[in-house]
Image 1 (cartoon, rainbow, N blue to C red):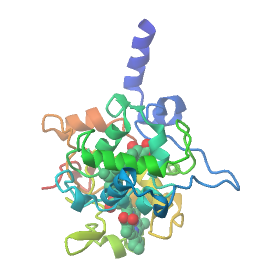
Image 2: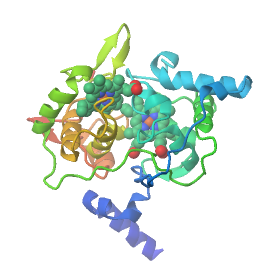
Image 3: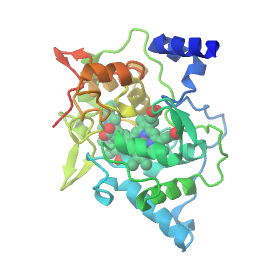
Image 4: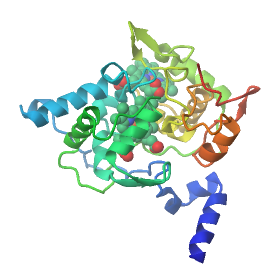
Length: 308
Ligand code: HEC
Ligand code: HEC
């Protein structure tokens, strides 16, 4: 009992830097752990192809899950608060290795997450992305929409071992540069490599009502509670996957700088906002959540105010 108390007190005072240096502390899944690297000659898990889907209730449910995954905002307008679709971050229909593929995720749940301090089912993990990445209201665990998304992921994971972190899960780590990151240099990296598609104002580009290039900040982007608001997480996604079609061309420094630039802009408020106070929310939810700028002053403004 006494030991436990000491351990939890120590955990409460440990700095983010110490956390990152301690692999055991990372097991709490506040952030996804680094997946094993792919061995030479080894292949990533190969999800089945759509043409092999059976013509029965299962096949129908998988097709429905796929439709929701790639067109979430239109399929589930009542649950999505921004302009995003699951596929914007979980690329190639949730199939792409190193872009948090659903086949890498499904076999790893249920799992404990310190973010909500409980053992999360797969449905609860998806609900997290609805609440933060989609800035919306999560569908119920037993709803049709959730059944479809889970069945789709289950199918993508066909033949994958359970409880074993597979190469290609999440995003490969990009170590923080020794000299830190520069928002100013990130603005240059952005202008040269990103603004062409995501817009000089970061708001993405639409055709009709739909984004063809998703917004990176602003009211239609992921909110301040999303995993992507962490500079370290965004740097890993960007390094492996952006500029689109040219993954792994930025240096680690450029990936960190442009991630910091992206995440130094306003976006929808963290829905866990504590008593209307950015300061209190920062303390409770952002102080130990990787590297992030929530509640931090940048260019004379405290970030984390949210958007209309
Ligand atoms: C803005 C980008 C973004 C969008 C949009 C998004 N996600 Fe995520 N998702 C992430 C990030 C980043 C992570 C990893 C989070 C972390 O490390 O904390 C993640 C993690 C997950 C995981 C767990 C992955 C694992 O390996 O454990 C699942 C499952 C998931 N998302 C499902 C979805 C679904 C379903 C949707 C659509 C309803 C969605 N996500 C929309 C960014 C996004
Ligand atoms: C050729 C066009 C193109 C370029 C250039 C490009 N992106 Fe993207 N980006 C996309 C598209 C399209 C998606 C959504 C992928 C999908 O839906 O399959 C995306 C998704 C993203 C996402 C996740 C979704 C979101 O809106 O948060 C981030 C973050 C991102 N890009 C950052 C960047 C950064 C940083 C750069 C520059 C280093 C960059 N992109 C360059 C086209 C581009």
